[in-house]
Amino acid sequence: MAKLAGTWHFVSHENVHNFIEKVGGEVGEFIEESAAEEPKMTITFPDHEHVVFHFRHPDGKEDEEKCKFGVPCEHSSSHGKKFKSVLAKVCDHCMVSDLQDTAHPAHTIFELYGHELHIVSNMLI
Image 1 (cartoon, helix red, strand yellow):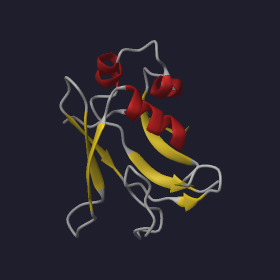
Image 2 (cartoon, one colour):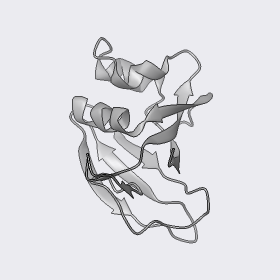
Image 3 (cartoon, helix red, strand yellow):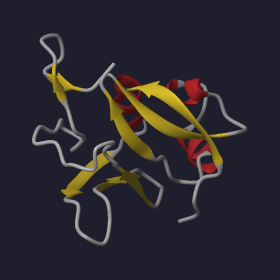
Image 4 (cartoon, one colour):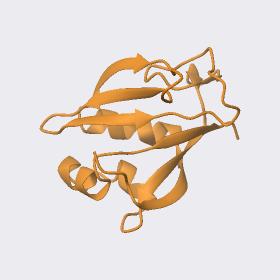
């Protein structure tokens, strides 16, 4: 899987959830961090290769709370457990809104994103 060349942008946590659900993603098992690699999760999409989401924590520590996608969470009375935004690497030829743009077919999004979206930080803002 090729590494995605692009620029880091803040995108909402909800947009990432919507993106996964919109293209029919089936969430795989959350793989705990080991000495060799950071936490990651494999998402299976129809007609696509497995897509791996990577998670890094600013303090290098694993949060105990995780939402349904295995991502570190904070408590929120309005939406259960969640964090408010993530830092995602977006292709320089794409708009951040592509994460939620229904005009883009899923295969187009994945071609633009190089079949990989990196979520690198939970930003509690």
